[in-house]
Image (cartoon, rainbow, N blue to C red):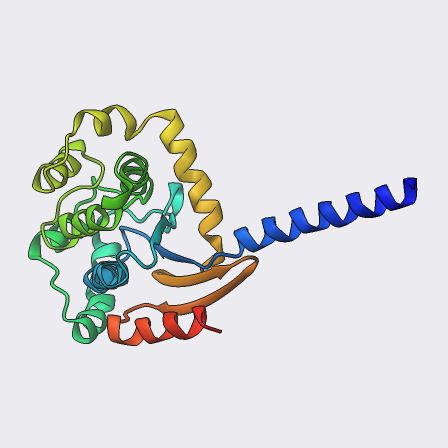
Length: 232
C-alpha cells in the first residue's frame, strides 16, 4: 500500500514538473539593444513595425545591453569624432538613417561621456512604469541623441520625450537614477549577455535561444522567421 502511495505521489510530482516546464517554454521574443548603438538607432523604426504587426499575438520584451559603461564609455573629442566619421558612412548608406550635425558636435565635445548607464536606466524605468510604451520611448531616446544631438546624461532630454508621448513625468523623475532602478538596470545588463551583438532579436523557448535577426532587419525579413519558429 505504501509503495503504491509513493508511486502515485511520484507521478503527481512529475506531472507538476512537466506542467511547470511547459509553462516556462512559452516562446518569448527578446530585443536586445543599447541607446548608444548607432545600428540600434537605425533599426528602431523596424522593431516598432514588428511590434505593431505582432500586437495581440506576441509581445516583444526590450532589454538594454550596457554597451559602454564606466571607463569603457568613450569621451567626446578628436578620437571619438574620428571614429564616428569612419564608422557612420557605411551604416547610413545601408540603413538610410539620419544623423544630425548636432550629434557630430556632441562627438567632438570633450565634456561629454557616451555612457550607456543613464539612457539604459531611463528605458528600464519606463519599462517598469509603462511597459507597453518601452519600445516607443527607446526610439524617442535614440532619436534625441542621433537626430537632435541631445545629451543623455540630462534629465531634460527624457522629459521632452515623455511629454511628446503625452506621459506624466513625476514618477520617472523619482525613479530614473534611484538605487533601485540602477540595480535593476545592471541586472538587465547581465541577462542581456545572451546576445552577442547589438541589436539582436532573439526567440527564447525554455533554455533554447534562437537568433532571428541582428544589425539592421526589416519586418518582412523577421515575421516569416517568427511564424516558422513558433509553428515547429
